Amino acid sequence: MKKHYLAAALLVLSVFTIFLSCDSYDSAEYKEVSPVVMDLTTVPYPKLSDYKFFVGELKNLEPAYKVLPYDLNSSLFTDYALKKRFVWMPEGTKATYTSDGEILNFPVGAALIKNFYYENVLPDNITKIIETRILIKKASGWIFANYKWNDEQTEAFLDMNASTVNVSWMHNGKEKSIAYKIPGNLDCVTCHSSHTVYTPIGTKPQNLFKDFSYTGGAENQLEKWKQEGYLDTYSQNTLATVDWRDTTKSLDLRARSYLDINCAHCHKPGGACDIMPENFSFTAIANPTALGICVEPHDFVPNGEKYIIEGQNSNNSLMYTKMISIKKEEMMPTIGRTIVDREGSGLIAEWIDTMETPCP
Image: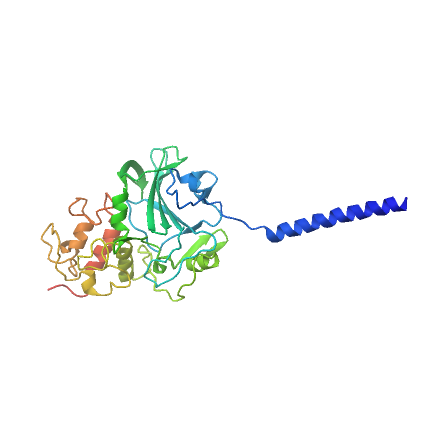
């Protein structure tokens, strides 16, 4: 009888030991894996959901594991559309830092995801996502993938042909209506080219050096990227742009930050407009000549403006004229907007009108 009890006890002990061993093994070996699907031989996929960047209802844009939200100090004006940005990189890869004013060097397989949406869309005051643009880094370089959302807000479909979406919404208490333009591939190439190589625009340390409110609390974005294994290093003394809407910052910094994010991707060496004298890069535009101050224009002059920027006279400055125009042959930028950025153009007018020195 004792032998039976002893055998039973040994059996129970063995099973318990095996259970503990398995549990310990599972705890030690379990590692969460990003669900993102990124087959570089088949992207771009026909639907946004195919990438599995988001969990739950697609329209909620709830990022999946290792899909990291981010923001920029100042945002490119796109007919007042709001934006939600995300980044994802393959496991074991990271971006590398070159300088504050240079685009981070992203690894092959990386994806930058930008969603364009409006709040208070009429008639029901709802939030409506219009499009999602994805930049994907292949071994041969970056490719573009634009996705147009359906009216039901359940899915977005690949659409590389320029199209429009009618949108009416409340903006600062006033109704606005536009035919929002989703860019085609040629539009993407125009703005995203540097020395004939396709490249992102906003993901420079100077634009990312800011706190972001993550689920676990606010943290500097570059530090967060480093902790997540998405960035090798960055400068603790980053020369950063500012939020141009922040009136606690100097007018000069705000104006230069606005010009950098809205204009410098074309108006810089290697950009689409590098035949012009202007260079609006934040790290370069302390130079009055590069800014176009008292520099005669080299292109079409609608109203006989003598200078690109005439100090103390925004109304006679070609830059301001182009910013407040919606004529295709006059306006700048020619892509990305159909209406005037009243607040942004107002900032530039104030900056010009308060310059210390007039032009001769």
